[in-house]
Length: 67
Image 1 (cartoon, rainbow, N blue to C red):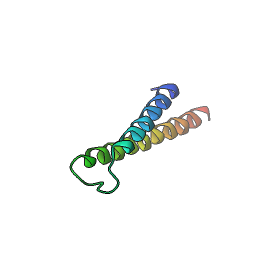
Image 2 (cartoon, rainbow, N blue to C red; image 1 turned 60 degrees about the horizontal axis):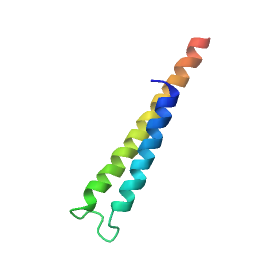
Image 3 (cartoon, rainbow, N blue to C red; image 1 turned 90 degrees about the horizontal axis):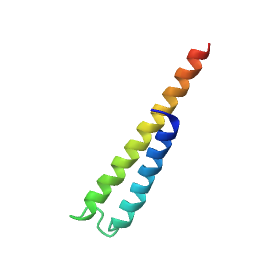
Image 4 (cartoon, rainbow, N blue to C red; image 1 turned 135 degrees about the vertical axis):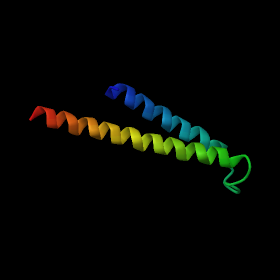
């Protein structure tokens, strides 16, 4: 997976977070309809964290191979 694809996936995850935040009813965030949006936000945040870990691991691997 190259860097451009990873960045595109991160941007898509941020867009998903923005969309799901508009759906959440902040007066009752764990209500029947809002809980799906909350789960979507958490899942997108996990995806972003995993993609950032992947980018960091690729950078470390590249530095090790240069030595």
